Image (cartoon, rainbow, N blue to C red; front, top):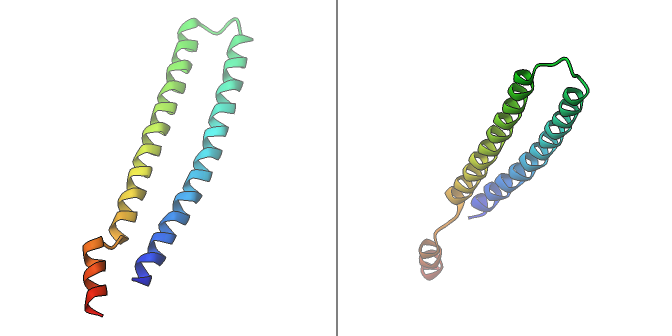
Amino acid sequence: MEANKTFTQMVDFQQVMFDNTFNLMKTFQSQGEAWMNLSMDQTPWLPEDGKKMCSYWNETCQKGMSNYKDLMDTSFTKAREMFETPASETSAKTAKK
């Protein structure tokens, strides 16, 4: 019982660490995107197709990051569920004591 609580706390800690790291990466991504957009706006010789490609690349990166975040959130939830003791099992153990 205590082991399950400890593992659940470990999963919670790992999720907090992941969320903090992910938010930092997201901040760097948005700063890079802002810098790239500013650079492209100030570069008149860059072809329009090149600008479109860079915008598409940014959108793809954002979508990939969003999908990765969703996947990790689902994985943390499943890991947490593995260590939870079902209510029926807990009440059965209490009744035996």
